[in-house]
Image (cartoon, rainbow, N blue to C red):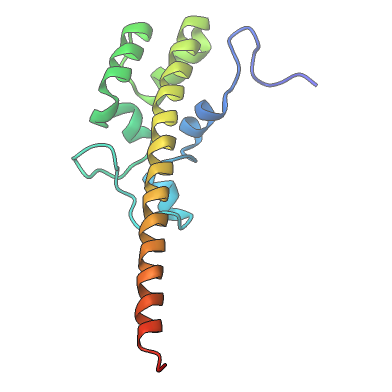
Length: 139
């Protein structure tokens, strides 16, 4: 069975798929599935809704990665320009894939850290509640 992705132009990676679909470590998606209480971006101070488009075009946390992809594809970063670069040849495909890998791996690491911090706080609160409840018990 032949994949719809042309092997000549590259492979469709997990993180590239996340960016193209918006189903990944984006605040809007995580909020929608109940893993975040807010859809805001954790990576920039502008408090924008965190979407794939925000990460690709706006978020200041990814300025360096954005400069690299713009230099490579020589186009602005609209969805149509990104797709055009991807299907236009191997250099464009590689630039888009590299951008997605860098941004999404950083976003995933940040999400794991937030989850670890939340778990530690939850464990501390549970220990405090147990002690308090236990201390109130008659001997």
